[in-house]
Length: 142
Image (tube, rainbow, N blue to C red; front, top):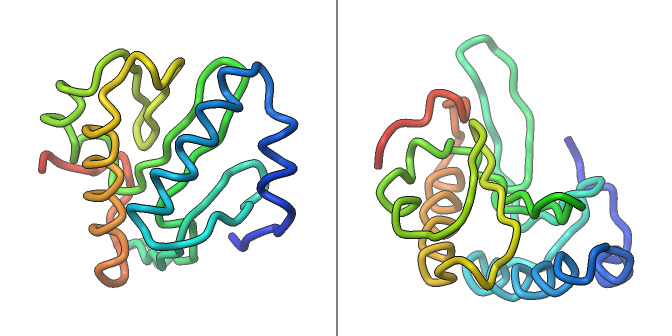
């Protein structure tokens, strides 16, 4: 996967509802601070940094090392190392749901942003430490 380019600010300006747009602005600042990277569009995902993955199957590629997508129903935070790697932190986060490698947030005002920053920092650090070879569904406890 490669970044698709585009103006991140213009993309966020078109996000609805307004709560998702507000949360997207907050997440851009949080992820810039955590990663030291500028936001880049990867389709409809706002990504920060890049990591290379290589699985035992031989499949490999590149993806954003941290990122999120402001969707209508919820904001999706991507955790390439899997939500299982963040079980303890997720217990302190506040209102959320999860998928295998995704954290779904309906409103950043209902979560602890310091805990979210901790989760994003840990995930980013894990996947940028070298070639990452674990699928999100195989992520273990931290």
